[in-house]
Length: 353
Image (cartoon, rainbow, N blue to C red; front, side, top):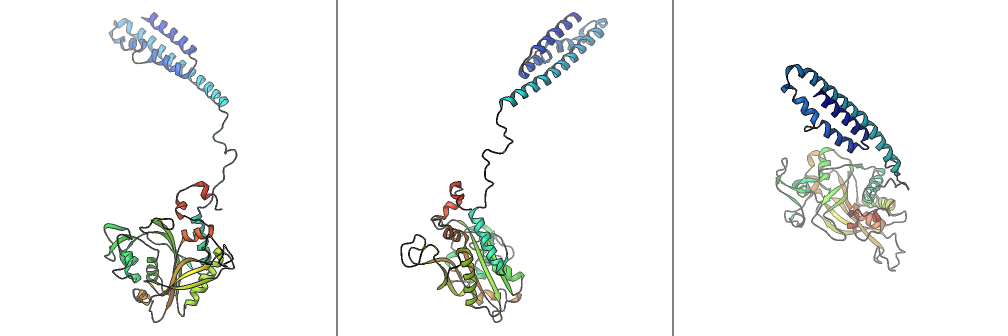
């Protein structure tokens, strides 16, 4: 029996030395040390031998197994090192190195870039930047902003309602906000006048075409103080327009209607792409003016919802305005379809630096 063990051990050592790959070495290990291999079976059968043979045979088998395991481990380390060296020589591309040529670091998305430009302008004019919840109550989104119960924007065909949800504090339905204007009320509830804030953020409406998307970005502005007039609004927006579109811009106000402002105006900026002489222009269509936002003086009814917070409509006045960041970006960069801002086409996005 001991002779058989020595013979197996000798065969195994030869096979280990001849193994040229780690895969071949694994086959040798299974052949001589696997569950069905002869040497482990001999060890399991020691108990069946006569008592006088058990000690010598068991010792010989254990020694052979340990020697074989050590030989396999040593040969495995050598083969692994050799195979690694072969791979390093053959792999001429070091994936840990920077690309060649180096790839650009990237840049801000044009919407983020435009939003920051708008924020910088108004911060320079003394406004603070606020943000608010995108899931809003009907009270803040419509009621407190003087929307009548029959206003079209309340329709489920225009606004995304959260089915079955009600706002705990106001006991009204819950919507995805249609504008950032709800923060007007929230800001006045938290801060007494004077108040100068802008509120950028995402808003949601059931629109989808070349100039509308179901989700877009808006910047709302609110200024409340004593003796504020429509002239202050025009001067503020003139400074904004010149900062964004160029120093020669002019603005004009056209009568309009918004539920939360009275009077309300549409604001146009003079075209920055043409001589404004009626000649063909793909930006202003030859009119010489570009509509950029809606605005107006805060309706006293809106102040009525926050009267107890210091906003007595007989004591304070204010103006508000709202603009779409996508529209400002589209006008500034000549983007004909704002949906391209969301397609993640690098060929488009790389044009805006």
